[in-house]
Length: 364
Image (tube, rainbow, N blue to C red; front, side, top):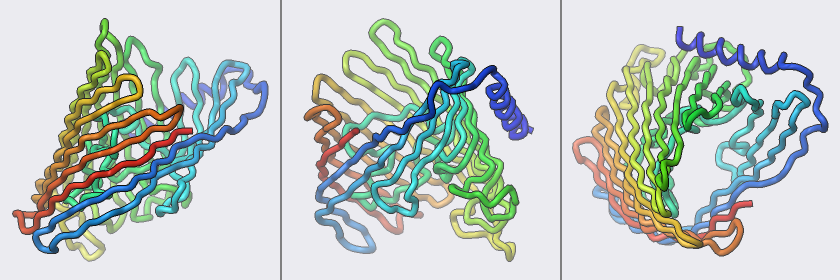
């Protein structure tokens, strides 16, 4: 019932836009080019109880070219497009692609993009590699959980969806997403038999307002990842919850975040057999704490992220000291000192390591 109501409401809003009055554009959409690039070089040293020591020097990259454009129709409605090309081939050459319609009614988004619960989340700050984003595991092989973030994304990553955001009123904004299928770049039609979760939805709200010299930012989100129509290595029911809080004043920001994932299973394969530990019932909880300072061209941050999984008895703790220095417009030198540790079920295997990483973050 909730999913049907959400989809119907979003479609009604979209139809209202279509009949909002004369809609001839003064000119066609013109595409501009932007994006970012990060280039890192560092050293890592990792120790694993069952596998010995491993590590060394490494160079890593991350970057995207963004093609963006918009036009404003004669009725005042803004229509735009966003296509993000990965600078590296990493199983997905196009990261996100979507169109949006924006006006006094709010913002409607159609395409491959994260859900409202992810986009409206306020996480912990970082002036380095980042821990709540999970990028520290590129350097330290701790027991990291891809879904173990406080942003509530889990297995939904840029799948095609319909999302609506209300206008911001007195600091408050609400958003909702409907996800027909959680498979990204899937245009096979609404068959419901593609072994992919379908009929997922997300709802979220956030608040942003300044009180004298203190800026307050708070968020809360929920996502139901839908049901699986065939054999799949995830539990039958999968939900996530996320909350975040940031307080900023005089260049300082302190933040705390919490995320929880509930899984009800086990998921059975075609033969009616439970599928591994991923299909077990249980919870996963993640806590993030951070503080940062930025003044002039300089910034420094300290962050902690910890996760626990009840169904596999895994856990991890990660710490980061980050720093940045602005060299010019869109050019920053950044660095991180990272430490993480983790263990699997009953402590049968343990991993810990540290890394020192530096590089450039470029925006254009």
